[in-house]
Structures are given as structure tokens and as C-alpha cells.
Image 1 (cartoon, one colour):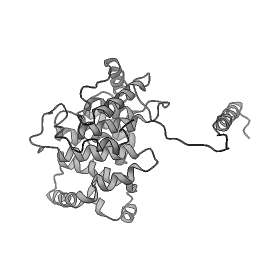
Image 2 (cartoon, one colour; image 1 turned 90 degrees about the vertical axis):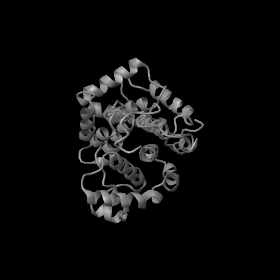
Image 3 (cartoon, one colour; image 1 turned 120 degrees about the vertical axis):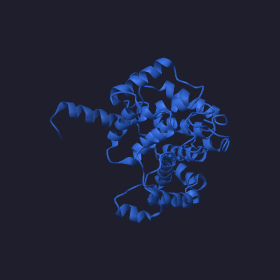
Image 4 (cartoon, helix red, strand yellow; image 1 turned 45 degrees about the vertical axis):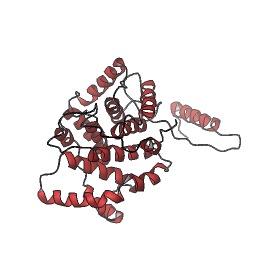
Amino acid sequence: MTADPRIRAALDETRRRLLSARTADGAWRGELSSSALSTATAVAALARVDPRAHAAPMARGVRWLVEHANADGGWGDTPQSRSNLPTTTLVWSALAISPGREAPSALLARCEAYLAARCGGLSPEFVARAIVSQYGRDRTFSAPILAMCALAGRLGERPSDAWALVPQLPFELGILPHSLLRAARLPVVSYALPALIAVGQARDRYHPVACPLTRVVRRLVARARQTTSSPSRTSRSARWLPTNPVAPVTSAFMSSSAGIILATPPQVAEKPTQGLPWGAGPPAGGRAGSRALGLEGG
């Protein structure tokens, strides 16, 4: 054992807490924590799909976010966690895309001060650069986060400019067998693939690549994936997974898919309509979206 009294004291306290959490039958029960990240992404997804049909769960979600903000104006992975940049950015976007349910101005001011201090400012370029820098070459996190920022209007009013700041995902590789993805050093967990494909397609929808051949390939792949990546075939298995990424993965799929389906052509969609960035469109699925995200009846 270590002779450092501080480490010894920490070990004793950890052991005490571990033993105190034991149930009467001698077992330990594990529970997932409430999550600002999951709540923010779920609220944003419901707002993109149909804010009127999902008004009640959205209101509860926003209220929970307001009540669990940290003193510094940020949010962490759990209510007990320190604030971090990715989660705070997602909450900031969720509050922007939820019309009529704004957080108190003082809280928004603290939130934006927190982000500005860590991004160097609140301009779209600064925010995007900070998020990309947070994850380095791994785009499987930075792309969905910035996609939500783009959908919420946090990366600017012009869709083409906003989506240019979202890292492109090679979604056309989604047609390959999973074994080949691993061989190509693209270790993406299978349950996240539909969400990442949807994010990549949304980015390509608003800010397509310049290469004509790549455009053709991506259009063909997008058509081929319309059935295999639909929510009816993916969210059922995803939402039953007892892991924290379930709600964010489902939310990313819903938000990006809605961004693709409900979008007008990029050269026309330059102004927000119906109170949401680039149009929320007509009702799409009623209360089914909130049930898929676990917000119904909560």
C-alpha cells in the first residue's frame, strides 16, 4: 500500500462509499445518471420534427436543463459533473431551437460567457474550431455536435455557410460490411452508424462536395440507404440498449433526417421560416418521436 496519507485517505473514503451503496441482499445496483447531453439532443430533435406535437416533453426537458445548469453557466455529463464544452454547446443549441421556451436571460448570458471563454468568441468559426479541436481527427463526435449547432442556427443564418463548418463524414462507406470498416481503421460502433450516415447526408445536402463523381456516388448511396437507415429499422434496437449514447444517437438520426426531408433546395433556403431554422415543416409522426427518445410521459 502507498505511504502517501492523502491517497490512503482517498482509498478509505472510496471504500466506505462503495460499501454504503450495497443493498441489504449484498448486491450493488447500477443506474444511469440523468444527462444534460441526452436531454439537449432529445429536445432539439423533437423541435426539428414537430414542436407543436412535442410541446410538453420539450418544455419538461428545457425546464430540467435550466434547473441543472452549473454555476459557471455550463453543463456537464451528469448533474454532478463539471461543465464541459461539448455538452454546453449542445444545450446552447437546444435552447435556440426550442421556440417560446427560452432560458432566463441571466442563464443564457452565463452560458455564452462560458462558451466564449473556451472558444475565443461566439462566432461560428470560433465555435466550430473549438469543437473540432476538442476531438482532433475523430469526426464521429465533432460532426454530430456541429450538425446540431447548424440545425439550431448557431453557426449562422445561411445553411450553406453553416454546414460548411460541419466536418464531412464519408457516409458512402456505410454500404460496406462492418469488417471492412474496421480494416479501413474506421471503428464505428454499429448502433451509431444510422446517425452518422444521417449527419453525413444532411451535411452533403446543404453543402455538397465539388467533385461531380463523388456527388453521383453519394446520391446513389443515399437512395440505397433510405430503407436500411430508416428510424423504424434502427431506433427499436438502439433505444433498448442500456447505455448512455442511446438518446443522443437516436436524436442525431431524427434531427439530421428531418433536416434532409424538410429542407428546401439549398439555393432557396436562406431564411428561417415558421420560427425554426429553415422550416420545421408539417407534423411528422405526432408523439412517436418523443416515445422513441424516452421523453413521453416523463
